[in-house]
Amino acid sequence: MGRILLSFSLLLFSFTFCEAKPLTVFFIDVEGGQATLVVSPSGQTLLIDSGWSGFEGRDADRIVAAARGAGVKRIDFLLVTHYHMDHVGGVAQLAERIPIGTFIDHGASVESGKQADELKAAYDKVQSKGRHMVAKPGEKIPIAGLDVEVVAAAGRAITAPLEGAGRANPLCAEVKPLDEDKSENSQSAGILMRHGKFRMIDLGDLTWNKELALVCPDNRVGKVDVYLTTHHANADSGSAAIVHALGPRVAIMNNGARKGGTPEAWQVMRTSPGLEDIWQLHHSVEGGEEHNAPENLVANPEEKCEGRAIKLEADEDGSFTVTNTRNGFSKRYNLR
Image (cartoon, rainbow, N blue to C red):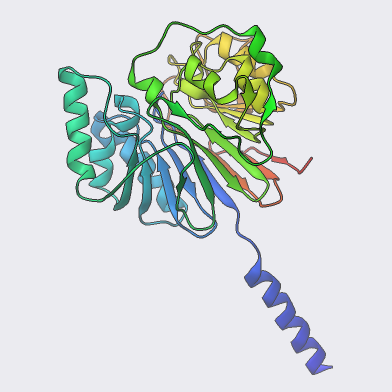
C-alpha cells in the first residue's frame, strides 16, 4: 500500500510540475497611449510601447508595477511600434527603472521637426545601450515559448498569407481608402502573437489604408481571438473590412477618457460577427451611454483614475480569461 501511495504522489507531483503555464498579457493604462506587457510561458517578456514621458514617471512606474506583479525583473524585448510621444515617450524613464535587453523598432522616422527630432534622439540615446532589431514583415521576434510574427512595419505588410489564412475578403468591395497618411502612425510595427491555438493581434496606430493592405483583397492574417484596438479606437483606423475579417471574440480598447474610443470605431467592433465582449481601459466620454462597455468591463470608469489594468491569461488550447484589475471581475472564454 505504501508503494502505491508513493507512486500516486509522485504522479500527482509530475502532473503539477509539468502543467503548462499560460501566456499572460497586461494592458497597462497609460492614459490613451500604449503599454502592453507580454509574459511568455517561458518567463521571457515583451513590452509593446512605453507610454508617455513626464508626469513624474507615471507610466514607467505603472509598467514596472505590472512587471513586478508578474514576477519578472527585466524587459527582454521592447517593441516600439512608432515614434509618437504616447508610444515611445516613456522609454528613458522606463530604462532608469528596469533593465531592457533588446530594442525593436521599424527603423528611421518619417517625421521631422523639433519635437519629432528630439523624441527620436531621446529614444536613440537609450536604444544605443542595448541590442537592436529592425522589425520587418514576415520576420519573428525570438521570444522563447511564444510565436510572435511581424505583420506590418515601415509602411509595408506581409505579402504571403499566414498559416490558415489567405481567403478572399468580400468586405473589401464595400470599403473606400482614405487620404494617404504620411505620419508615423502609418509606419507602425504590428504583430500577431500565437500561443498554441490562441491568437492575438496588435497593430499599434496603423491607419486605415495600411490596415487594408493586410486583408484586401485577401485576408492574409486570418482570424484572431483577441483584437487590441488599433489607434486607440479612433475613426481613421479599424474599418469593418479588417475588424470583421479578423473576427475577434474579444476586443480590448486601449483608449483614454478623452482620446480614442470613438462611437464609429466602437460600433464597428460591436457589430463584428462572433464578437462576445469589448473591454476598455477607460470609459469613453465621447462614447456616451450607447458606445461604452458595461462598467464591470471598464478598468477605469472615472476620468481621474488610479490607472487600473486589464489582464489576460491564455492557454495553448485557445481558451483564455480576461480580468478587470479594478474590481476583480473575470470572464472565461472557453474553446469554441
